[in-house]
Length: 487
Image 1: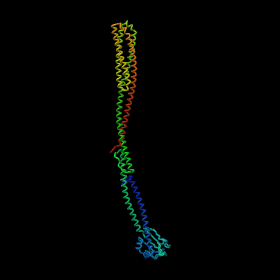
Image 2: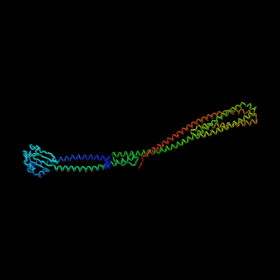
Image 3: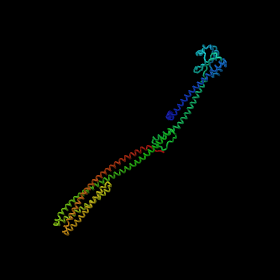
Image 4: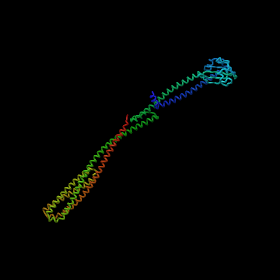
């Protein structure tokens, strides 16, 4: 029961109701005390007027003096049961008395009368005393008696308990108490019912919705409170807050799912890019090795071209000797033909290497565009070297045939040797250019290798960051899933 009382008093509406009921109770009892007191005063005034009636009647000869000895007549006139009534002369003698034992006695001999000290004075009006004796209230009146001409005769003494007036006062007090209790009960029921209907039920709806929002349950249906007051405004604000939270949670969930999917895709792409970068690095290493080998071959071609150039110069200087040493010239021409065959083979190999380099440059895409240009130039030089070597080989064969057939054709060999010398110089220059081009290609490949390594590192970093982003997206999604959207 104590818990029920505690729960009842803990509600705001019940607190307000109890406060209103308390104020109403205090107001009712204050108002009742005021009116009861006022009614008592009116009863006392009425009773005093009734007490003055016998004196008025006696003074005007409308009532016999002997009537003061008749309690029924006195009760009829006064309205209360008179306990004592006396007519006292100006000399202090009691002429008539309701108590017959006091008749003809002097006032001074009766203790309760002598204490007033008023019977030796002429009174202009009645004097009243409220007295209490043995727990009971009494009203005492001492009124002057005069003849019609105004002659002062004496005093009328009336002593009566306030029985009827007290009874009426008690009846009024109980009537007020019962009416107040009934009014308080009725108004309490009305106030509590009104507060429960107008406030408690609405506050309970608002509190329930706020509790659901605190627990992460977002309802799509609004709170139905139709009132143009603070509770209605609060309900509208809570509805707007609920809708805003639903929109925010929905947007965050969508964004978290999008970020999670995007980060996963980025992670897979970065892994593929890293794998491609590793493959490119391996290919670049292979190309670099091939370029280094090609550079060595070019240097060897250059050396062979130098040797061949020296031979052709010696042949030019010894053209006269060739006429004398035909057999030796033939041997030298055969040896030269063999060397030219070697140059032809080198040119063919150079052409093949340049083709391979062009293929690798095409695989490298935009990064290998410069390398493709250099490879094309190398291929052209190799083609020219091959053509020159083929031409020299043909000339050498012709020289051998001419030397075998006709000695005198050796005279015509001098211009061919001069041409051979020029071609060898061109081969030397081409070999030098090929060497420089190979060096540039090697430098470009090294730069490409650095770019590929940076791409691989960037791909690894991107993969790690995308993994972190995906984990953060999962944690965000897990955190926002605390809220649930319910119809």
